[in-house]
Figure 1 (cartoon, rainbow, N blue to C red):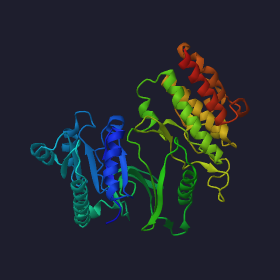
Figure 2: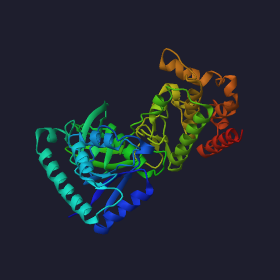
Figure 3: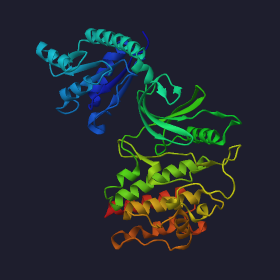
Length: 417
């Protein structure tokens, strides 16, 4: 049979290594993806582990909540078979585990390798058969539909948003073995050919594909199907920075987030890209609390052969635009730094620096109003705000790397106090 692919739910690295040893004795090329429930919390409720042959769940891992996890996961229709590692090998314990939803149960302290590998083979075949039956049902066929496109290998969970160029869906990817976001275009061609919006869609993929940075969204795939293009990207269950900002952030937290964004911009700018739409809604929060920059649909890559926007046209979000961007003038990397200053100010004060009744009035304030003042308890961050939000580009930090260095220094000074 093909190489085994397993999801291992366990917080103990030593026990993970033991289980990995048992599996690879039989399947040396097995792929074992680990999930630490103590660090990452519960699996997303929409996740069915359909891209795995089986799931290994250690009784000791969720710290007393293992049977609850087993019952909850086992109750998910279509979830992969679960092999449960119980505290002992008593028949009553095994019966309890199977009643709770396990495919089979084993003593975590004394594993019979032959019985384990036999159970894994049976589980993999059972899962394969169950998936084949499900895919043939109307429900299974419908789950492959993303608008007018049929995408095999992805199970549609729900629609997230609709746009003028593409629609967003939450889906489970069998290949990635996790929940992903699918960005699916509308029909590629109009009567007069492929439109500019599709070129912008391809540009976004080309930009992010070249970037490999922990603070930039991960792209899994790009494809064409049924006259539609789609991008498969990382899903952020924690939502965006805007959601995180609903609760007050300390000075240390705000500066830390600003540092992560600056490092992302440093990588983006080094690749010859300007983001041009930096705002809290385009900064996502991962399960581990780290940030990732998304949405490069308005970004500009210096090396691209085609020009997406016309000179003098304004793209972006007025509350976060630099003065030059708001007035349709030439921009460079320092325009993104201005937007970073706006985001940092908002994280600290919990309000935008400039607001008005219409977009043009907001753009005017960015160009003409003084750089806003922080309240006295936050005054030590004022020099950073002043540099990031300077009206003239030459007065700002020269690069994202320079901004990151200053932010890192400010954090070190806070830690030393």
